[in-house]
Amino acid sequence: MPRPDLLLWDESGDKAEGLTRPVTAPGTGTRMATACDRIRDAILNGDLAPGARLSQVRIATELGLSRSPVREALRLIGREGLVCSAPGRQVMIAPASAADLDELSALRIKLDCQTLRASARDLRPEDLAMMRTALGRMEAAGPGGTDAAYEKAHRLFHLTPIRRAGGRHADFSARLQLHVERYRRIWRTGSGPQSAPDHRSYLAACEARDGETAARLLALHYARAALMLIARMDPSFEPVRLRAALIAARQGSGTS
Image 1 (cartoon, one colour):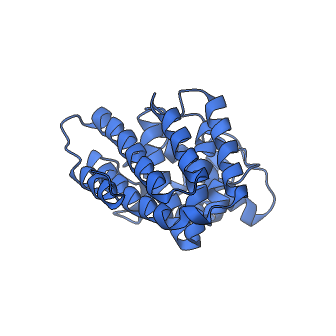
Image 2 (cartoon, one colour):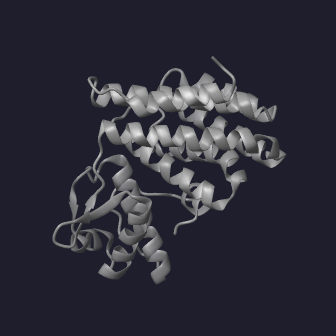
Image 3 (cartoon, one colour):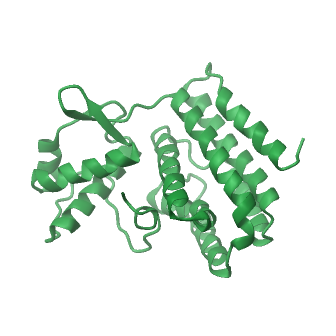
């Protein structure tokens, strides 16, 4: 299973946005990891569309690889849930829908917000420094919030406090964030005008080790971003799960 620190917190990565640059890395493991990065990025960007069937032969040709590292890369990405099996032993990109985003966002609120209530007090100075650095990079990337620099910093910002809950928890939260990021990048919603003050208020609560306030602010931030996406995807859809999770998060913090 991919470690979230390798998947999301690599400070030196230089990911390509498509499948057009040949891979020249000599080692099999390196070729597989590079294939994994390139395919994942293409899925997150929507270059490989939701529901599309994949040809391992075509991907291997475009990457300049044999089928073996591509097959292993797709297996690992399948564990993240970004690809799934299709009839005839084919692989397809995971479908996307407002209902799926509703469920993802509700689960993310339940998991991450409850975690913060327990783990905010354990945040270390280096965690907070990392969050400040990530926020600075996000703000430097501009208000659009869909380019690679922003996304990398955004992952780091949100997952840094969560990883204090332990590796398994951080891995699951990382995968949820990856799925939500896919929706945001495909539908090009960007970070939204409220995102910057949301992030600054959330950071301030983390700096104070105030788990209750941090959890409440995070729930509102997640819900606001998801509702903006759902409205763009399907304005008639009612996000029942998301609204229920938000209410529970607010009640859990003692907020009416």
